Length: 579
Image (tube, rainbow, N blue to C red; front, side):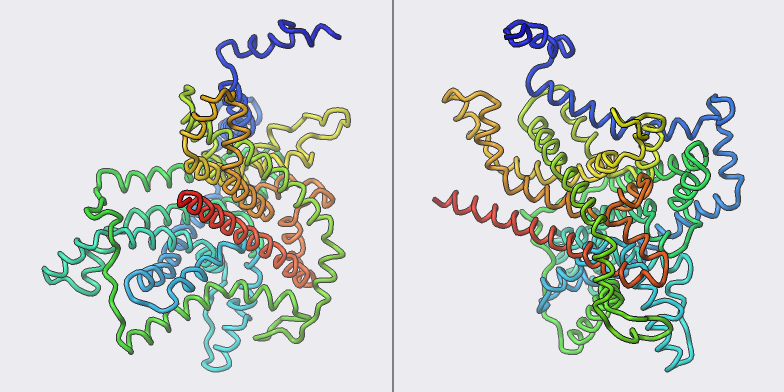
């Protein structure tokens, strides 16, 4: 037997020598913190550092920012990104507000179905439906061809920035719908009744009382829409709108090279605006009281609609749902189309697109299963560990660990991709000599970091439902902390852990912003990159749409399974409590 296997040997003393004050969960927390710092904080800080670095002398400078704002293209890109984000919030509000108000304010048949249909756009990544929407709303798309034929007019729905705004608004409006509907349901009914007793009705009541009380939910949703649109890369690229910040960052790094300072300056601005948007939303809500007097708020007092009101309400809802489901309709038609050009509908339908897709993209799908699977497994392991450390221990800095993991939400995918390229530039893969920046493992690591917040929230929610008394009882019977976690806590968290895995896997499978920066060859490319390549040429769009349908099915099935697991776990717990 070797010396390293005996108690008191160097191998036993090494962990305590490296972490003299840590043991057990403390060491796990330290290792996770090191992992997050290495794969999230350092790449982002490196991007920020290079943005202030003179490429010739290596000294810190502000000249890069002067060059940025001195360029008409970059100034235009900055204002375009801000304009598109702001207008997307406005259009998303116009879409979400009627759906949220009608389904929460009135006794409305089918309100749950309407709310559910309103969430469907989140299932489709925005870049997937961009080309399909162009065929419906574009200058020579279905709607404009019919308008020209009947009325001789054309509406520039998809021209330039308008197309990006329309696609992004339709995709991200559910963020406002979800948060606003929740706030409307939690409004204290007595405040509405008091306003009505003072003579406030209709739009005045909504404008002066109802909407201000629902402001927390609206601001939360609007901030998410602004950030997501500002950072998105795939939609502008597929719509050939390059005069925005995220596409410019991608084009500078991919065409000029990793040493180009402008790509890093743009990345710094993207990160700064993400943080600024979150801070501004917090600042707007600070010092204002939206609390309710009743337990649970009570929600708005619902009333029945008159016949003409019901017809108008159903008409508005049908029109909105038809618009928000148009990407799915267009993508489905395109995936079966033989030719669809300068015509309201495809000339014919075929299954050949799916055959072409399957023959050409088997590698994309295989890579996606591997990358997203590894990322999701790592996410639930790390997420479960962080959740337990934050909620069940008093380890110093445990809250910081939670914030650190969640910070990935504020980092645009293109920035993380550029940070990884810079961080691993010049490094080689052990034993192979290949550049580490082009290694497929780096893609899986990027997906893991990007989707960790989703798994963490699911694991945290699952752990909140596990009573501490069960752990205490196990430990009182002599079980160690590790055995208690393994035999008691993890089995009881299974539903939430599985939901976190499915959510992470499904969303990682369609990630484009980070992966497009890290793909070095088609053989290593995931599904989202494959869709992007297919959509570059008119001849490949049918197969690209078929692959897009696969992506939608993956996300949709993942969302359904995740929800089913959560509901089943909830019913199981309720039945256990009754027994």
